[in-house]
Image (tube, rainbow, N blue to C red; front, side, top):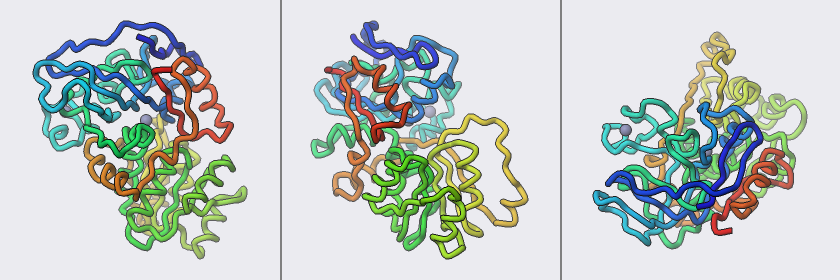
Length: 350
Ligand SMILES: [Zn+2]
Ligand SMILES: [Zn+2]
């Protein structure tokens, strides 16, 4: 089959790789009809990979049709249209049984919990994807949810929802979302769905701020972001901040901007092992700080219902489409943050 493979910093290639096969009776193989490129794939592309492996297929956002199943798979059969959650559960531990796949007790390392970050679990930016323990790691896709929406539901939308849940957004509150890429845009939609009265949005890219404004977000303008946020909230600061970037500067902004006794929820991925966390500031502020990785399986049921009802519009964050063969150019565009790029979908048939 054709697939993208990762060979080091800024080196993504398109070419032939061996077809995946069902190697365990619990597994399935899915023909991918749409794959996303995620912001965390850009960490890999930039040379900050999550494993030292090279030559593997990246991608953890995939939607498709089941083409083969092992003898123990009971919930799926060839021809079923499915969404493949980015997080992978073992199907055996208590946490996975409850849907908390990110807390799997059997995974030896975090690279076993996600497709496309090492050679262990090849990714979705390919024509075919092998899915372990298919009965728990596939989700039936209703006909009225488009591939566009479904790709966003594999990771970005549940991550955003999880971040907003952990920010404990209450009806009528003012929420600040930092980073207006696909996750931040879905966090803004989620905050409104949870009853936020106002959502303020921070992003360096003016095009992204303008797009978010179209979704009802109040963009924070000007060079002094913290002062602007203070002005927009009558000097108090927002009740909750959802941080969807993961850089030191944006996490610091979240900690400083939130109101007294407010909540900060970090879903941006940080690889900093020595973040300068100001304990005393947090203590006098009576800060609530949450950080974590989303268990997609756990978050999905309400998101699928909200998407079908039109209360969440995951497809709105999709901006570009490329054939899989154009994958290297798609990565280049995404990394450049130009041309209004938000979410890129790859078409493995192209
Ligand atoms: Zn992702
Ligand atoms: Zn588990």
